[in-house]
Length: 385
View 1 (cartoon, rainbow, N blue to C red):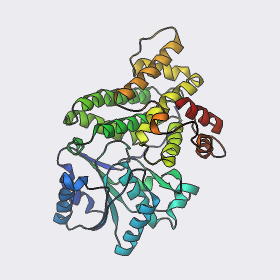
View 2: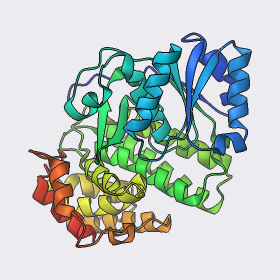
View 3: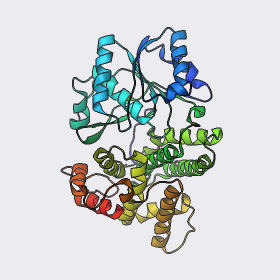
View 4: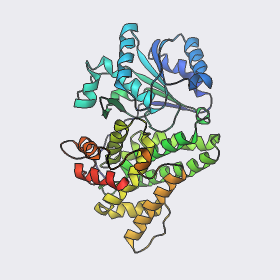
């Protein structure tokens, strides 16, 4: 096990009607906030009214920024930055899923960086940020508890990480999720599972405790995801899945181990190329192909995954067990209605796959389980066709 430092400063407020406490939760940080959200669903389901009433009851005024889209755009971030500076706002309150939360984090960075995009594109240091609070509406990205944000701009989709943008407060009420369509459930489940895979598959030795916790979280998410596909109004299943999604990305399951993040890098190029590609759907296609491409670098980890997570019977034929585990995972994704090829996502042999692969790996490589240079990335893209 490697040395590590773990910090989880987010106050995590979970359960029924928890959104009605948001005013008292943010009041210690600010009495003037920027309220960020996406479309009109929060007004149709009553969440917007709950938020406004709670803020008013606690003497917190707000300015709105609505219309945040999937694959959050830097242009929207700039609109939010303008409002923060013009209205002298002191906290950013995100009511939404990963795109809304990541947009809010990037807006909050404006007090510590003259050019926020340079933090994403050039690794510019962030000196400070406004506090961010969240009310989660789509469990998937784990951004409600993470120090990370991903933003799209000028054909690139890039990430940034800093403890300064980890939310100070996050509210998670499973009742809010019961109206989500099945495709969003599926995309969310694939995303949160990928967050675990990126940490679980490692070359670091002697990580038994985190391995076991990761395996248990994966199995819990998968079991309850199938229940949600049968009944999206199952509160208890949503409780398990949403809590699993938060723990998948709060950082704890990466403690003491080298992490990978190759699949996420490859998927970012897909959704940067075509913003209609859902992040979770892209990951559902790429993950089994990545597994088949890299498993020989450390077969023990993939054998362990196949037996402990996918319930493949142990056998002396190690490769047989590994490939059966990968195949069963691919079947699970398909049982959620996810695509199994890039062709289903609109990509063909004529798509700029080589260009995407070179953007993905840059001058070096992505991933750590097996370093993927651009030709490796291209091979995986082609395998996914």
